[in-house]
Length: 367
Image (cartoon, rainbow, N blue to C red):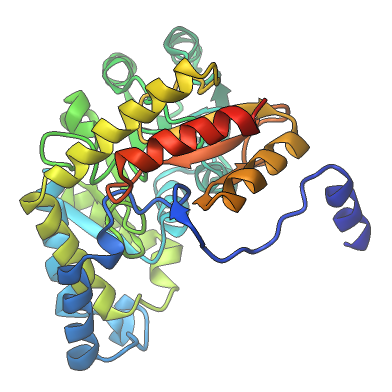
């Protein structure tokens, strides 16, 4: 272990914990709901009425009416039959993949999928077929060449967490229909921000009827913690019976469910929050592009500043932090070798002046 730490240090990959400071351009609190008055109020009220902890798993004594109510509300939000709450997005992905996939199946996975999806596939013991990032033609060939009678699954993020680009879900839905493939979509960074009602990119792409399950993190745009898995009622019931991270985890504190119900209310009643995120994201992408900064294929509130070298990325992040902007460097293994970057994420609370300032600073820091 000591040798490994030295190797990480030498490669510019040793990480440290750093509390937040300065203007937030690094968190995933896209709508600012973690500090919304209604969300805080509902959570505080639930602490007084329900206590701080659930005391057991949902299948023992940890179930509460608050969980059932917010799951029903979230299913309606996603236009699905049912939803199930997990303690985190990571355990939700782990639970979904290991429950519905087995060692005889084939799982087609985008090369940039989140570690939780990759780990779920590994634990399922299914064969993982990795395809180039968002490459529809390559995926089509792989699906059509798949040996029968294996059950096929396609697993993808809808909005990729480090590149800020979207999966071609409409194309994927068509391919899945043609080849008998089940589609599982991680909406971690899209739920709350995209779609006419803010329910995610599945809604925006018009593919709700083609998705078996979606995983919707609640600790990002929804402002609290955990994740909802949404889908047909029979599949959700199957997860209750078989998803080990759900069965064997103490349930989350009940006040989180109260906070999340309030978050859904805010998303429905304050659409201007997501409108502001989209408007300001487009502005910052334009400003960075005018400054000659490579932001890859980002079309969202997640904007990478691609620098390549680990040390260069860390130095640029330090300069922006010293100027009062909380921007973090992202290095391997979170991103592929040679693609170290700054990851800027735009939220509803950041004003236009701050975005213009950070674009100017980034242009100097990234020279």
